[in-house]
Length: 289
Image (cartoon, rainbow, N blue to C red; front, side):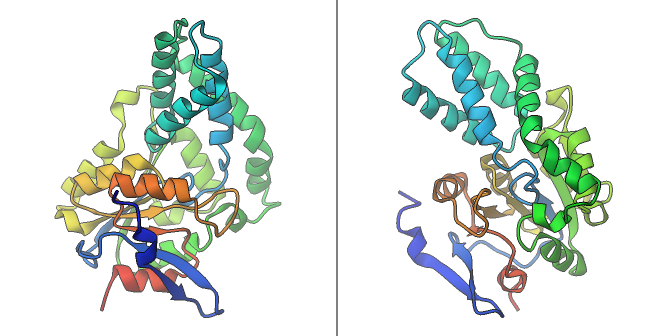
């Protein structure tokens, strides 16, 4: 299998403080260093405001499926839900809700409107993240506490190199704009922040990538896509770009999420990082002299 043994090819980059930062090179021959534009995912790639969202979505979806007359045992149901939730991570939330409805039908249940599922999930998620968001909004908490390590320094380094930064998230546009604002990220992305729309057919990361390439007259190797979701990595590679995957354990700073890592390798990741703590080391690799 592609992912097996790859960990032995990892390189550990020395930091000035003597610690190490994880950089795993999956495809060393993929061209790099010509990047003119960078597309970032948001949740789990930069923002930690919604960390733990899977622990809200998965149990809720399992609950809905277990109410079906032909539902599998709970353990099997959890496996089914985790598979499609992860596979669709990076797409708009509505797609996971559509898949939930299809799964409910498969097991003899009567599916609700996907928007009903989405509304209930977001209400449960808000209960979890409300305090974090409000503490950022009233500035009683530092924004850097809710960003992946080194995010601001890494964004600054790319911007200083003349790389145009874009942000695209499966989270609703209004929420992405609010959360990017309280995290102080607007100056990096300006008007290039994109999120899900009420009509989900009007937004996809594939559309955003195509527009970036067309508007900037890029060759594929002029784009780097950075994210922790299967979708943006797969779409970035399909467009000929470089895929830098972020396999962080959002609940444990600085720790690798091994399951996420394997899924990102399957999606086509060229390299894996946990965070941006050693920005200089990552930049040196991405832009070889």
